[in-house]
Image 1 (tube, each protein chain N blue to C red):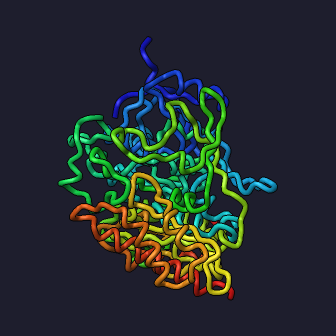
Image 2 (image 1 turned 30 degrees about the horizontal axis):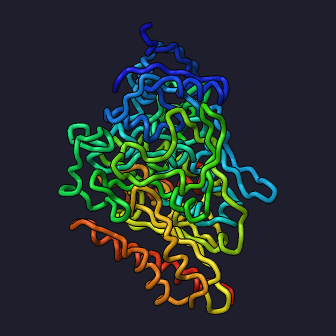
Image 3 (image 1 turned 180 degrees about the vertical axis):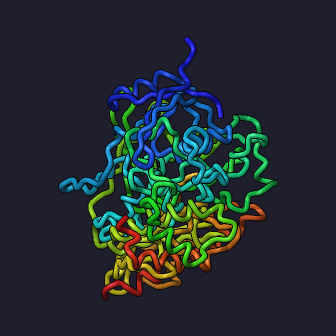
Length: 331
Length: 177
């Protein structure tokens, strides 16, 4: 690990100024991903600005605007929050599907959003990787890519985003609150994450020095209360996803009134399946209709030899969770 | 100007206060083992994957290998050395002995610290991935213990005795200490 200076600023403004003014500075919160990447030599900041004591922590109810989740909220607290469990179960389930009890106690909501890919080439500094070192190449296309992207990838990068939580937040239309050197702003999750294109070095649209301060989720509804997360992985617990899905379903009689579908581990970002959602709104609420709509969404997939299984896996996950939610739906 | 890459750090471990001069790179795990001679906490993977380094930080179980000691602040650290009350073992320690819940013993301090934290989490009603959403129950059974302890690996495969040990401790006030 490279040596680094350490600072604990008094407030958010000072923290943002410190990191914005120093290209080699990084924020430190839970540290579960960053400290490991530093030990691996993937990250080598010369200054760590510790924001763990100054980030807001906890879930706040905002009248008429939903819940505001402080970026410093530990993952375990958010998963256990009664309002999240009751009104947005997909989010609690996604958090509990991720990592381990110890990591969920350490990891923050902001850090979870900003964790880096677990692509083995990214984390191995002896190998080329366009995300870690621009222009060095991507061995994954012809190498170990079983867990990598099938949607929205580029020649330069087929990394997947590893977060479970972010997939649920995508389905819930979450918005991310950011403080930067130019002031505060709020980004839809769609505008927060990006596809790799020719510049896979960046996972998000954030600028250096931007600090995630909170995540906002809109008011609960009949849709969000009937929501669920399911994750397929190599072990029963404590493993990253091969594919996952966050789903919410509201039916009216035998018809889909509203639906949300977001996939995890298929792309460089949580993949909100808007094509499938549009096809399903007003359609019959049947497993056949779910399957047909998801097939259209996944028609855009461009899998490689060892990850082609992810396409039917994702379809089956979505159809089975939608069908399970349909079973519970009041008629 | 040469950047300052070490600091004087105060840490509170098992009820005692220490002041150390530490390179910022020093993990809490290395501070415990190499600077405080508290070698009960073990280094397994050093990447937050095996659980051998689990300690309680501010009352919660964490991986000490991923905590920078300089960032601990005033949070109390409890290691496996701090669980017993003199010769009176913690209920989780006692249950591990009674159930022979180890083979080589290397993962055991992490398993025990993790179980202590986990029992408190369950007592507080925290759900797990196998908790039924309908009942929201946090009553521990084998499936709950296995899921909640997934962050602690045992290469000897002593799980068959670790799980009953933790269930025994859950019934004997393991969450209260």
